[in-house]
Length: 193
Image 1 (cartoon, rainbow, N blue to C red):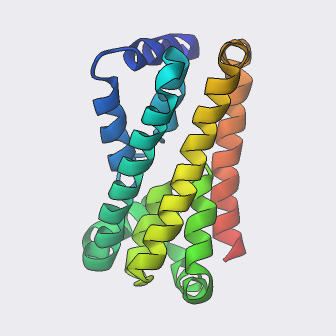
Image 2: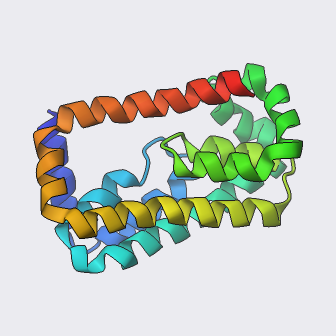
């Protein structure tokens, strides 16, 4: 099943409208959608390494723009939409403590979690809900999301075929590792703040 999903994603990544799908996924992931844009970014770069920087740019740009939507959801619609999303990720009980840490560490929190597989939408919505300075939010988002996606693109562009072979050989283990990192991010966020 995992192999079929991987093969499907590789075919989709080579499709003519792949960049449009990547932009859409990157945008919506930053405010609502649970699947990170890496599921498109990685196979797209592997399918066309000459376009690595353009693909990383699209992913970064639309991730940050979607983050702004998440910020405004938190700022203006937290009670109606934001709380539902925060509840979905199981973070509501710690939100007040988390909000207090935002006063001092907000930009660093955005920058750190923007680099990780942790759901960025939680950070964008929380940033708006606690009224983190929008300029600080934007700078931290641009730096962290760009660093993340350009690093992935650089690794894939530089080590393309060996990386692709490695991914294909260890797909199951890498999937487990991804989820360990994802839930590790939840754990850190839940108990560290």
